[in-house]
Image 1 (cartoon, one colour):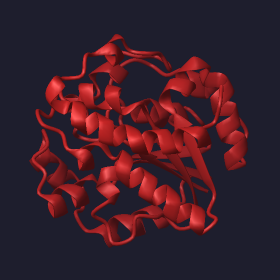
Image 2 (image 1 turned 180 degrees about the horizontal axis):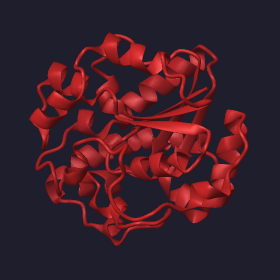
Image 3 (image 1 turned 180 degrees about the vertical axis):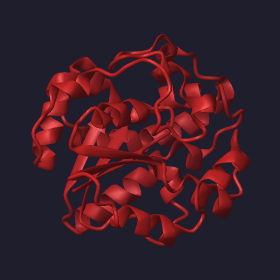
Image 4 (image 1 turned 90 degrees about the vertical axis):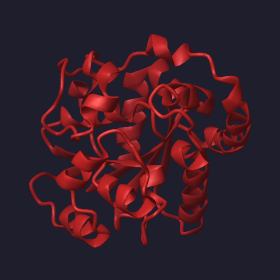
Length: 236
């Protein structure tokens, strides 16, 4: 079984990956299409050259690696929505698609700490909504998770998520050890400081950052898509 997490950036996507990595029946892949995105988009992200050296930038090579995975019953893939936007085929066949959304005000304020002038493509929410609509028309299995609701009651929401995916809940999913993980992408040193300091799901103090005024218009546009997806999210 493939669980395909489609997340915006500056979310709890890495914590979700760590959570599933605690399961004995699960292997996790961290943003396997990142080099594809960097190569096709030309985006100048921190650690760009390291990522391009560490991963294949050929979409079909990465897809074949995913589909040939046999080492565990469950494969959890942490994907960024904006990475998938440049792909010929953004979907993983026969997988459960899990959309992880977050209030874009928090995403943009956090993202601006690393990328000075984020744009809508960076936020990912517009493309998440486009993919959600496309999958809905095809009647594929879709789950929506909102970060705020997950953090209200992680155990309850994770139990609902596992039920939706047709797998048993494992209490081990609620805790992990501090520090870097062997399955982190090479970009972890640029982006994962908070989650490396965590041992479970918890709201970060940085989630209350002020939104820079120059990014207010981007937030208003992104909020439109977020509010369309939020009613479909699993409730705590």
